[in-house]
Image (cartoon, rainbow, N blue to C red; front, side, top):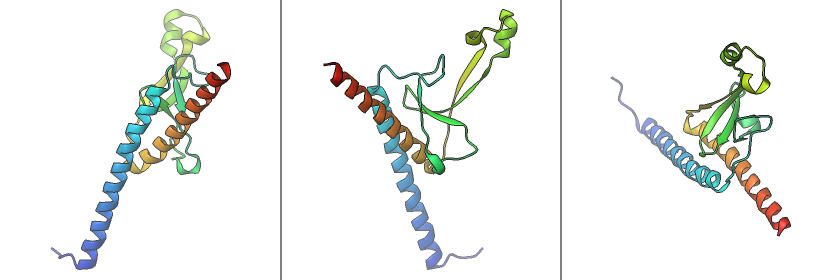
Length: 142
């Protein structure tokens, strides 16, 4: 077994420290996102959704292009949102009612801290914007 030299130990120590910093940032963003989401009651409906209250987290080019629509739910958690047709409901009811046939599915995301930071920050900015818009609307009504 090869022994590590001093440069290799220092490199691994820096990587380990960077991993801890990233994990701490992700953890702190998670707390902030949950707090902001709790403050945004009632939580807004996702555009064109019938059943889903959520806000999109669009990190632009920093996001994973292979990942679908990532949203913040009312609980401050991140989800991948999918829209589709609930074929079982159509078959069960025997009709093509747009509401009954609509399938909206939020799947919880488990992300590496590096990816979580990107999406959680984007989500926090979107929730903060919604909170500021709501406060401005309430201020205009007063």
